[in-house]
Image (cartoon, rainbow, N blue to C red; front, top):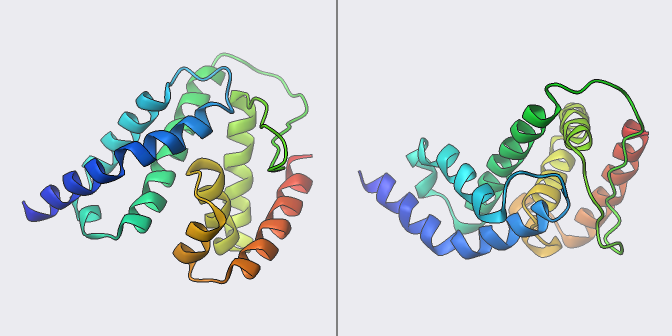
Length: 169
């Protein structure tokens, strides 16, 4: 049970940071049914079933938590979108200078699908977007996690944003 205890300890240490990150993600979705606390708790339920995660570093735990938050947000968007049909233009912004607007359920789903396609082209770029967009990690944390320089991360960020903008247009 040592791994489970380690996971519980790691979660306790990371809880406030995860809540802050979840707040920045949830703030982007005005139609979200999840509060930042709810998002963290739903993500925790996903993580709690994998006690081996407790043996990871704090930064790697944030990466895994970002993936769990992405899954929770995508699941929530699918539920909200279940009875809706229709097209429309998808607008997801990666412009850090903007106070990000809102992301509808369709936009979250479109981003998730685009990230899956990006992962086939560049897994590192897809992981970077997931960490930054869904996990709220900053440039330094993301560069450290991916074991690249901040300059490389900046180049990848520009390339991924351009690729995703084209895919989502």
